[in-house]
Length: 265
Image (tube, rainbow, N blue to C red; front, side, top):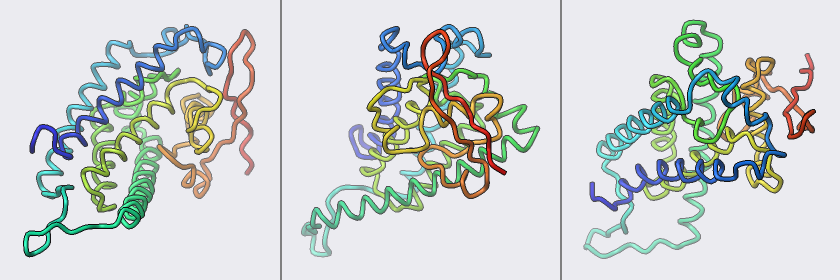
């Protein structure tokens, strides 16, 4: 695997994107306090893990993620260079066909990843052993923040994120080059869902019902048995009756809050 090959970039770029995008949110500081879903001080008073340990946990998950991705690319032996004909000439593929193919692959990958993560995420809440010893790590972040998006128990990070991503990649048939965009999109979406900010004009809030406030409800005690869907759609929550609606409203003392609404029987 060459240093700047598509495979190497597909491994490295999402990790770089994670820390850069998280840093942008953290750099906003007090200027966006009126859009926070929780008071800033609650990041320290309510959360059950230090930010230092969160960084260490995320780096460990990303190391495992990189190793698994390298193994998948090595085993599949796929490249995204120009295709060659039998006589050694280059095969020209029209841009429109190529873009339509990539769009279809991205749609398949998103659907596969959503289904995989919903099933395991919900099961980890239903299984007391898995919740207590594995998934509860992520819920130590009662008040989520941007760079805590990938803070999980190593087993959960491997099962939900890393293997789920590998399955989506293989099922969709996308190239390593297309996967650079897909995994970067997954990364940005995950960071955004945990940033704790309801910023006006946020493209993810406009395009997805599964967004920052939706996932914030899941991190609340009242909503912990609802809103399991991640990272893109709310489909499986709707299908299996685990969808909890909410309203974003002004919070006493300033800022905003995502208030869960009563679930209809």
